[in-house]
Image (cartoon, rainbow, N blue to C red):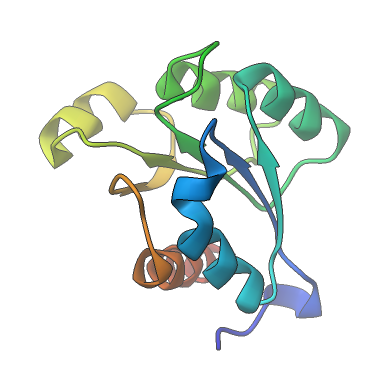
Length: 128
């Protein structure tokens, strides 16, 4: 189990229209001691970040009201300290080209699972 920074529970927002497909990933985050909020739209995610910035936003590429990279850029305008990860099927090169300058922690594959949750939390811990 990963230790949590500063002894506090990490708060993670997951922006996806299909949280069922992400259930193993979300369960692994919860088992690691994270509070996870699932939000179905970019608008709902932006609203949640305005209310209380999470430790991390995981943005799926399936949102009906925004491109994942546009949402990440919008979240940075709301709070420049928001860390994001994006679920994407793009190649590493294409992902880097599109996401450059957005400070995205990492790209997650479509339908990430428990191993990706551990990798994500390890990367988050490294920058905390």
